[in-house]
Amino acid sequence: ICIELIQRLREIGGVCGVHVMAYRQEEFVSEIITSSGVLQGRRGRALNPNRRSNAQNRPPIDEEART
Image (cartoon, rainbow, N blue to C red):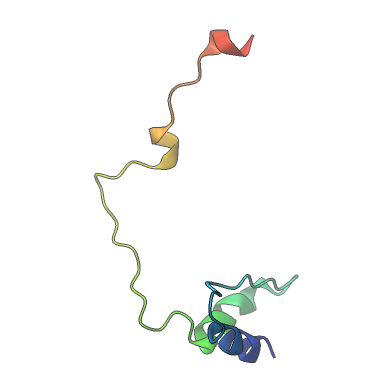
């Protein structure tokens, strides 16, 4: 049912994604996503060693401002 719903939702204009929840059955999420075909044609993001993570982009916490 879930796979069929995802496939039908893809056809609706303006729908940009789905949120799959599998309470206590998380191991099935990967299979559901793969079987639905929503990732076909997508390429993963290339790792860029020069890109800093969000944590590295944040300014340091000013200890004096906390008090």
